[in-house]
Image (cartoon, rainbow, N blue to C red; front, side):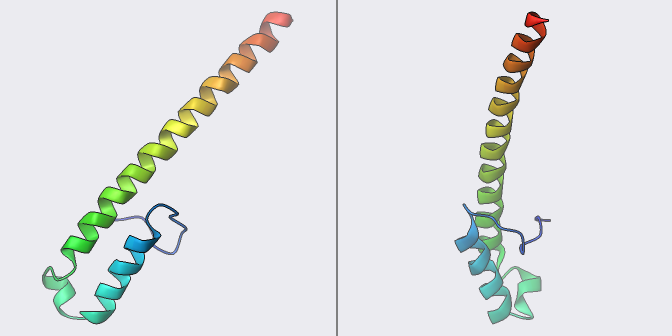
Length: 75
């Protein structure tokens, strides 16, 4: 299962379009694996996108923690 495709995925938009096109071109055979390669590529891109986003959020949280500790030390 993948996340909703209508949400923006800046790193993976070309792969999302490729999968949607494959589903449109293969209305029946998509159920028998015709689009699996496109889906696997999209899933790996989503995973990389998630890791990048998680690392950015972790770095931001670390910076906020430092700022909070500095403010707390002043009082």
